[in-house]
Amino acid sequence: MTVQARRDLLAASLDEVHQRIGRACAAAGRDPGSVALVAVTKTYPASDVVLLAGLGVTDVGENKDQEAAAKSAAVRAQDVEVRWHFVGQLQRNKAKSVVTYADVVESVDSTRLAGALSTAAARLRERPLDVLVQVSIDGDPARGGAIAGAAEADRDLWRVAAAVNDAEGLRLGGVMAVAPLDWEPERAFADLAALTARLRSEYPGATAVSAGMSGDLEQAVRHGATHVRIGTSLLGMRNTLR
Image (tube, rainbow, N blue to C red; front, side, top):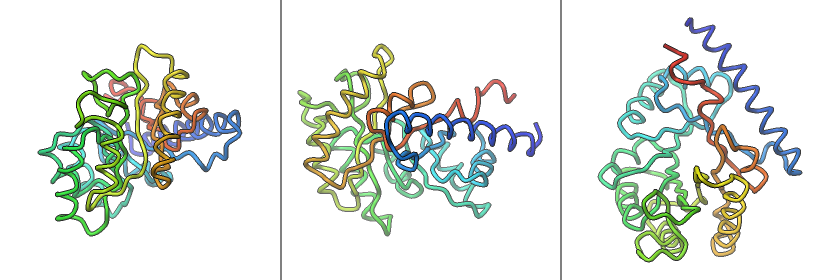
């Protein structure tokens, strides 16, 4: 596929995604400008990020440190600047790497991870690292996400939020969540909205809600998402590009 053909394909997909966001906002009585698009480019090349940036995309999400570090460096080498969101599960030993390129880490789900990021950010960054606390909507400890009222204090949602808020080098921006596969998105995001309301009452500056992907962005917007993370609907299925 030529560069121009890929650009045209991305432009058409981007327009369609923006239309979906616009319709979802209209249905919810919201300003379309209140919902930001995060293009999730995992497994896609740096060239796609460059093309998307040329089409006006400002926020890009990645979920693996090794891929994200190399890709962000390749994009910067072309004098292209985007806001990098780390959206995948993060091990504490990767904190030093992630803070060097990520503008936002959306997947903090333990006080220990918050501590590791704080130590790294305070040493390696000039500006605070924006952090979203990943919320476990269904409370399953086997999956990622902080849990409201967790038996394990390290993963209690309110303790994690407090740890981020009080940490040097970090700024509590809000929450992130993924709707469980066996839940209706409407129910999942309604529950998330209730947890978000409580968090905002304690931390008024934590306004970001990263929720909704290609298959459920409409339900997420209906329940207050400020960011939607879109991969497949924007970039296509990986095997179609081979």
